[in-house]
Length: 144
Image 1: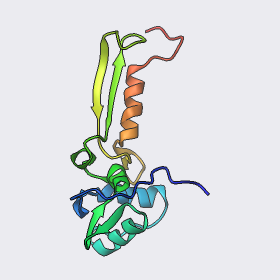
Image 2: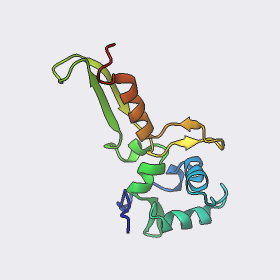
Image 3: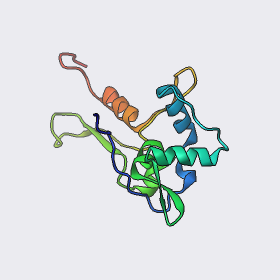
């Protein structure tokens, strides 16, 4: 049996229903998983789905996002999890003693948002990291 990639179902304090990017959730459930997603106004169905997938949890009769839910599908994960994101640095040489060629802070949810034709609408954090690497590295043997 495969273990889940992320497995932290701890709740994120004060992260209620409005923190989820329903566009990303809908895209993921329909395009990636090939399933069905509740309608935008079907709040109870969304919460049931999010609870079953452990992307949300309940505490004191209030629904809140889990850390996994926030990192994967949150509108602004950094707001609730300041340590989320990637600091990407590219040096002009092989060590950190060389000058910095590029320094970016990458942020956002891990999951990208795609259109119905699968074209990219908004990059996820992983895509942003790969884009940074592509822009700032040269394959071995290629002289720039």
